[in-house]
Image 1: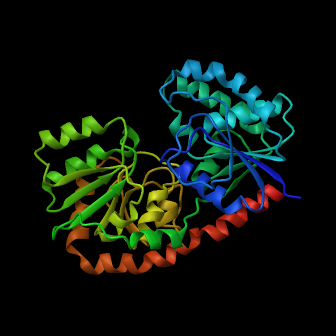
Image 2: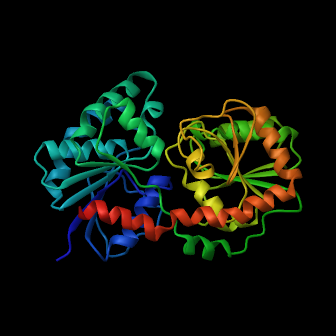
Image 3: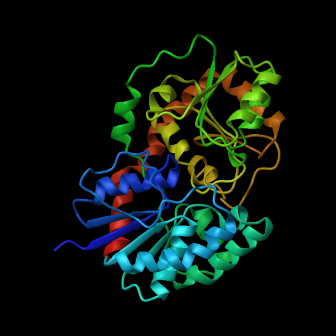
Length: 375
């Protein structure tokens, strides 16, 4: 008889945690009796057609922090009421809180939660950040097991929140699927050197600095993604007279066909959990320039280095890509110009990408999830 597994996440919009959940659903639905619990009806990713879905609510992502906080016990009660699984697996902060509160209310499921960001950075500011730090410090210790998706995130929970039952499972990538989709042709570029990036158009991804960098770079930049800063970034592009150099492509169901034709992947985040897009760039054999933000990029691009180190000046030619300081326009431009001029360097990174991406193949990551589910 199959074990019953519930998976709880806010929605299946076009984010990194949501993509991981979609992969898990496809890989595990024949081995377990899975129920997907959502709090919003957005489903961007393909999921098994026969999957059972229960909506705890259909909330707006723009709800106030106070309303979100007050609703936690109500949603936890609903989750306990409708969830009869042997194992509960939740992703991201609010679903994690709900799952643990449901456990405190008597839910019988083994409670496994997954932290997708570095909490001490994500929640460092304001009253909302303070409340989240309190909730993490108190509730996470009640979970049976916590999965961090990067070593940095796991260390943050252990060191800054005194949480011990943490293990690390990196995000998976379906290499066969990426390879297949990357072969689809799209006519979008010309002879100019082409930078490309993928990410929500929000403050944390810091598209503003890469757009500013393009003023003095002889190349084109294509940005895949959507978000609340779309209009602001459009205005920046227009005011800087960069309409012919910086192109917003919007959200793309198949970004890989664009990645495959580009010359270099650009990533300027201020902070991260574990950036899936770096794996996607490696899978498409793209050289990478990335900020050395906490956490993820150093683990992916310089796995033999000290992951607690953070670059403050200059650029670092790491084993699998170039690392640069956070929010530093001059070093970003230096790295971009180096990548444009040094064809040998680009070729070296392209050749090494296959070696690195093997470490994140779906098959071996799924095995790690199965081990913790079956434990």
